[in-house]
Amino acid sequence: MSNALSRAVDRYGAFRDEWYALPALVAVSLLVLAAMPFLRQFALFGVAPLGWLSLNMLIITLVWATTAQAWNIMSGYTGQFSFGHAAFFGLGAYTTIILTGNFGISPWIGMLLSSAIAAVYGLIIGALTFRYDLEGHYFALATLAFAELLRYVFTNVAQLGGASGFFRPLAREYADGPGLVAFQFTGDLPYYYLILGFLTVVTVVSLAINRSQLGYYLFAIREREQAAAAIGVPTYRYKLLAVAVSAFFTAWPGAFWSMYFNTIRPSTVFDLLVNVEVLLPAIVGGVGTVLGPIVGSLIVIPVGEFVRQSFEIPGLNNAVYGAILIAIVLYSPKGVISWPSRFVELLRARTDLLDDDAA
Image (cartoon, rainbow, N blue to C red; front, side, top):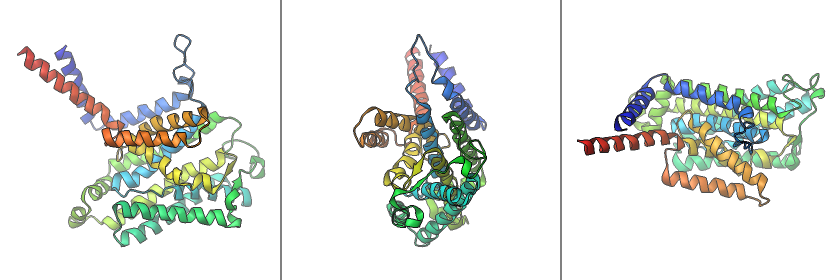
């Protein structure tokens, strides 16, 4: 038994150290997500273990997984902890629906324009905060202030919809009818694969950054910015780049949100709790890792949505989020993604103990 465990542990360690291990795990994870709408219908002895997962719940899960992945590019890779990504999410939602509903512009063009606007807003935030060397909780509070500023503007300016927001326009108002071009569908399954496509793109970008020289620069800034600057890394420039890329991709799920739901309001896309739902999956899964935001979202969001839909207690899902966050911070600061490695370490310790006993 000891030899079998040793071989299993050694094989896992060898696989984990290979260059292709992370891309392979990412590919497998995305393939599982692609099959999830059908896996949830699978029944074993008349019981469907995943039957409680509705398609709507899975769509919302992937929305926050995509947003968390984008947040992770900035906050996980550079260590610049943002508590204001609702600003970029909301800009994506509002810009897309305003351009589509008021001007008849394709929502795809609206999404790209909203991403550019979000990136510019991110550069403004970064230029103002990094110039004055804000970091840690000061930087986090500054990003929150910029998000709250947008919420105030969109709530009080009637031309931007005011507190009542906007209703999603009918597809026939800017296209021939529902379909991919219109960014609207008659069922939820196409929406699921569309947001899965968004998640795939953002994950591939995150993986590419993780494996590139840019990623090494960002990690150096996260670990010790002054030391990185001392060896010639232009820290200010790369932090701005990370903010812009993160903001650009955070607007994508915001645009999707505006076209999936019938209406958007400042209270739904700029709310303080939106910031929590953006960062919580990454924290639970593992900040600074490629798979962490995906794994974390699959744990946090379905549980929260199940509680919200099953119990008529306002805010109960937020209490569940808080409990999960506290548990992770106290008992697994590196996130759920670190559990396999910790398990292997325990197995290795056990096999060593068995070998010592045998000797």
